[in-house]
Image 1 (tube, rainbow, N blue to C red):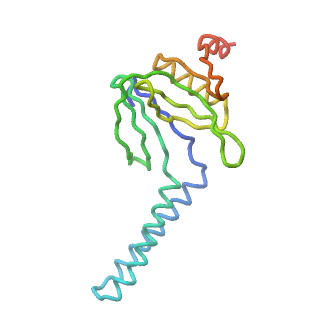
Image 2: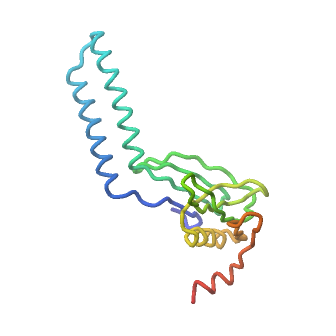
Image 3: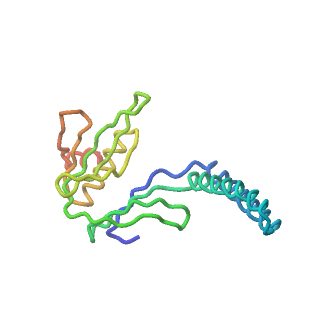
Length: 179
């Protein structure tokens, strides 16, 4: 990764998900191998294999869901960002250009179970925003927002209290972290 590129990543997957994904992919390889071994050109065979194809696709999707990671790359030098879905070395996503970084905001979003999650947004081009990070810890969200605002040299807004938004004094926050 380049020096002027920021990486924001969701947490690593729990350990049990990778072996389960490997097991599902092993079952996929077995089904495909079995179907190739019994291959013939009859009509009944193609009806039989169509159900296997559906099962293979379902297993592949489940395995990819268990071992994929969402990451966001921000290229400061070229003023662009990219959201990727990564499975091993495969990265799916494309770069989008940002004209002017405006500020970083942290706010809370209610969940269906009554709890809250804290969201960090990067605002650009005056009124457009991009959701970067979502965590259930206020201190983690503020830390992520602070780090990002320092890297981009922009302001940080605390919007966790509705209709009472406050610009955060980053110097005071920096001094508080060092003590």
